[in-house]
Amino acid sequence: MTTSLYDNIHSTKHAGKVALVTGGSTGIGLATAKRLAREGATVFITGRRQAELDAAVSEIGHGARAIRGDISSAEDLKKVVDTVSAEHQRIDILFANAGGGEFSPLGQITEAQFDKYFDINVKGTLQTVQSALPFMRAGSAIVITGSITSIQGVPAFGVYAATKAALRSFARTWASDLKGRDIRVNVVAPGVVVTPAYKTELKLSDEQIEAYCKEVAETTPLGRVGSTDEIAKAVSFLASDDASYITGIELFVDGGRVQV
Image 1 (tube, rainbow, N blue to C red):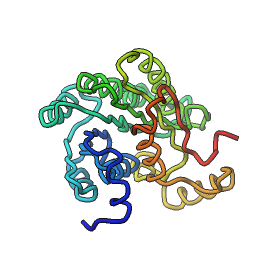
Image 2: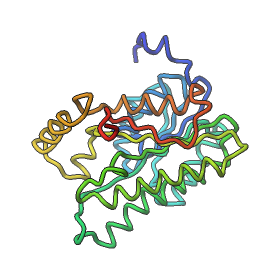
Image 3: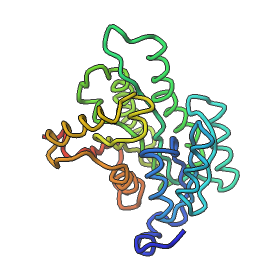
């Protein structure tokens, strides 16, 4: 892999740190893993599909490692954390990003759908943080992926939105729980950022995605949708020493969509 000007300038931002990114094989997780690795961190990613993990590790470079696991499984999470801790005895940055959702309007929401996404998004994130916490030292940072949908009221997206609202509440409580340990907990709330999940989970066609992006551009102050790397930059900031006096916040990275 060739060295870019970016690498030369910013490769020390997270130098010496160990980062764990859940859901790191695609989308925002992959973009964040790439950025943290370029900024000097030793990066571990998780995901459920080995082929995607292998491709992601190749794309990230910088010695990144992949550990296959499902965050809704306590056994898988133990394996993930044990692998990282056995090699480095610590986790400096935890990006609890893994999650999912699907459209289902009120009146058609099934118990299985509810259980699936609360297990992944809420219980899975709780288990991720609790598993990693014993290996996090003073000065470490936890960043959780939230969503603007938690305050929007998007039709047919109630279960997903509720899980993200729960994570926002968790972050407030955890910031208080960790008082005195100098471990920060923050939420990054992306706006509209097109990722592979738009097709794989939300089941949207190319035409539907294009139409949605056009609608968003017309109703967002910055006049466009965001990119995965723009979210990654915000995560990197929250995880960095530049944010050393920031904890318990929800940082909206949405082009102003829910701000005005």
